[in-house]
Image (spheres, rainbow, N blue to C red):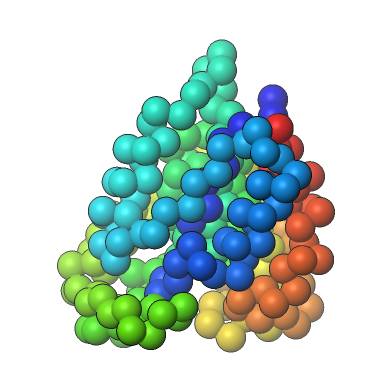
Length: 198
């Protein structure tokens, strides 16, 4: 079964303009034009973000009970991607995925700016932390559905926590590296192999 629909979920304070999202969009457009690509701008509310995503992909095709979609998620988007994959039983590629965002983002309550447009402001509300707690999916039902690319040099998240969360999955543990995965291009072949895009 090939992946015909690909969802990309960006991280906290990020957007579809992120380096990795833009590169994946270009790869899909150039090499896999038959694949339906969707990278939404996620709202600050985790409940609204995941709710909107699930509403949209509910209309995506299923073939013989198998979902021909896959999801890629970076940082907080990796946490959301895990929630999607657990619900849909689909493949997920996780790029330095957030494991406990309710804990980690509690200190960011208040006004925030986006990375790609500092003129864009949003307010991260206390209730959003509770929404993140609700969305934690617990132990993975099918670890083999995941490829997690994890940098030991991640300056934001603990690589050991990420590796433990996705134990049993296909793990790529990088010596060094950074949270943004600045060497993203070197991982594209493995990502494409795992996704099996149509």
